[in-house]
Length: 212
Image 1 (cartoon, rainbow, N blue to C red):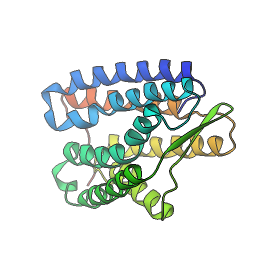
Image 2: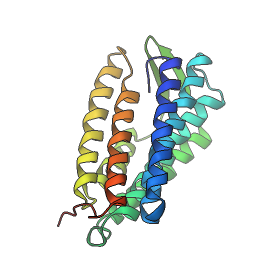
Image 3: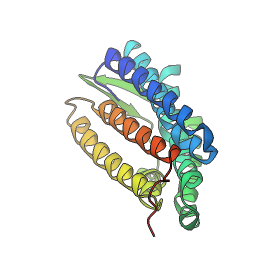
Image 4: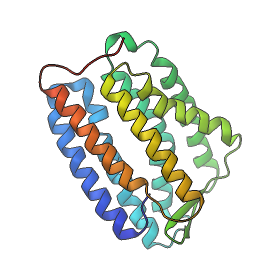
């Protein structure tokens, strides 16, 4: 999320460009491709939100598309991508966040199919509402699937990336709850560049450092 339609559009375009570079670098390592493509997904997400801003919020197609990417798609994409890229010794334990992601994605997809997601412009922020039942459990599953998979990846670069994502999410959430300003797009840009360097290091020997 960004603080205006223009900021979302500019950030989304820049993040997507980083994603193109990441995918190009990962082309010789197919297992890294899903994770390398994550900035493409995040960039598209920001661009979609620029349309939400332009539409003044509401319940239109842009709002639904934003929610589909943010909720079920990322909940499943991230742990699956981390499982693909992780060193062999870590893959068994990564089945836990993958299972959490699958269950969370299923619950979120059902909610989106049966409920109406709405967006509301609140100053320099956008608030989204879906009315999730057992929201705390869903949030816990989402965090385990996304940040948890990175922290359990067994790859030092991905663990550091997970810590950066967790910090950025916490700061962005604190500012968003105060309806002060949306800053996630800035952290998403930083995270995308960090991920690009991870992909670049993996594409050039020696391979990235694994954790035991």
